[in-house]
Length: 274
Image (cartoon, rainbow, N blue to C red; front, side):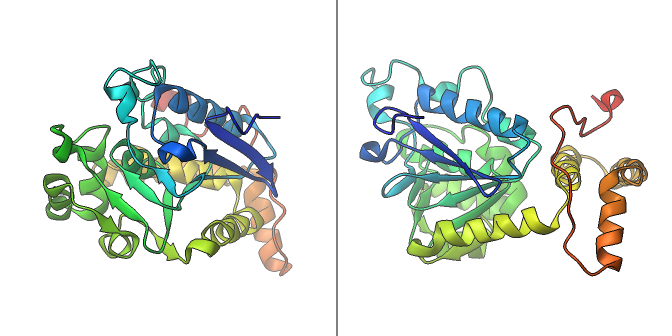
């Protein structure tokens, strides 16, 4: 069992949901190399665990992740360089995990913390939670994938506003912009996020969700015709999976589907596409 006093990311699996909790509450869960390595390692574990269908990431205390640990940036605290973003894995590593990852943003989410949230598949936020890119106000540039993902989520003009100004914007505006999907009362955030996760678990094929996630990230920069061609090939392949048979039978029989867990060795995309 993890030592909650020393483990920088807590881990719990319940109801087929893996909940990862960034656990440096005295520092608003500020990002360090050690936290990044632990977080990515636990994501990898969740990907391989057949009992896990959905991953939820939240923060201990008042923050989700308030950015890079400033003590580390100045040479104190964690000796790892927080800008290395996990050292052995890139910040976009979560996009390669073949299971839905939902950020439950419970509080301050800034700088590299915001970038980490953007690399999750969905973002639910507590009402009043504060978000900011922050980089420009520290004499830095649009780091850690923010210049790539923000324009695709919210458009160039809105992305430039958030990146140029480094201003603080609240969860409610974040939803209007498209940065987050939903906003819930702070005391309801984790429960409502788990409700959403349970709906995915109860009704959606793990194979289908893994493939859809891979399609979304793979096709983001492709032209329409080749993307449709690949999607059609994946659809034909899915006809041969047991999930398709179970999905049709459950619909005809008017019952919830009983999909099998995602096999640990499941090849989401054909090898020849790599």
